[in-house]
Length: 94
Ligand SMILES: [Zn+2]
Ligand SMILES: [Zn+2]
Image 1: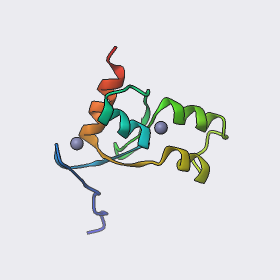
Image 2: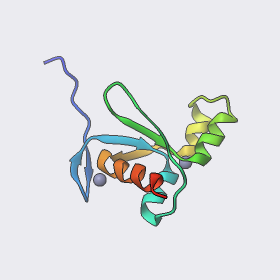
Image 3: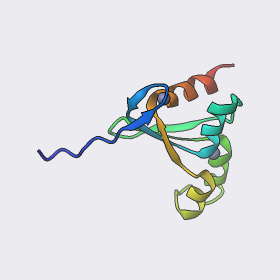
Image 4: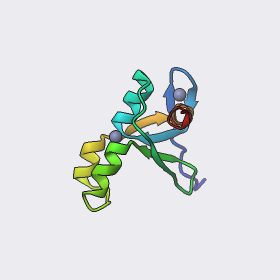
């Protein structure tokens, strides 16, 4: 079989899920319930990549490219995609 193995992440709440990539501040938002804004994109595989307003500002003032410096600021890590959905809802709620 030529298909690559699909990455999974284990979530205590949701079990085995597809991974989403988010900045450390957005993960902090999920934990402490404070909105930090959320900018996100879905790639062609339907995978989420998200980051907070602060990271977006940092990114815009550093050439709008993900590189060592901007990634160092964001400290992107893995989240399960259902938790990511919660993060979207949380940031959209008024
Ligand atoms: Zn951030
Ligand atoms: Zn989850």
